[in-house]
Length: 138
Image 1 (cartoon, rainbow, N blue to C red):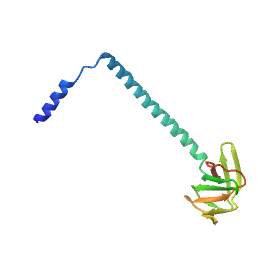
Image 2: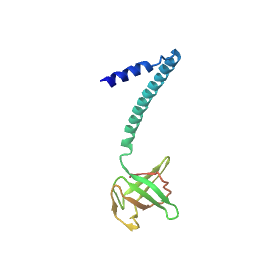
Image 3: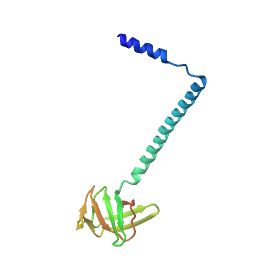
Image 4: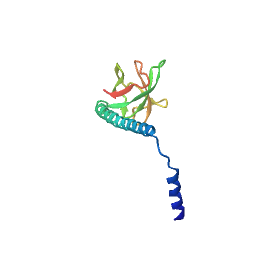
């Protein structure tokens, strides 16, 4: 108990009076932090709204191109949905878009007829499919 009283006395004696200028600066800084906090909340809400609007448009997403071998014309896809040989896929990146059926598909250099979510497959493509290209069901 005696230690607690001693500590409280020390705190009271060491407290310094702040100059009016420092108080004014702290007020302004506090307001800036508040403004930043509010701005973050507003932008976060807007981002969430935009993201919610974009989700239905990309509902048929099958995967994303992670690599493209230009000499052999093969795109490596990381799948987020199932794909079968014969499916029609839409490759979309910015303004560039092309449609193509899946003629051959391989996993680890072995031909497969179908692949599920989470697999990494190689698909023969006719046009250039740069990394980052979104792949949709046609």
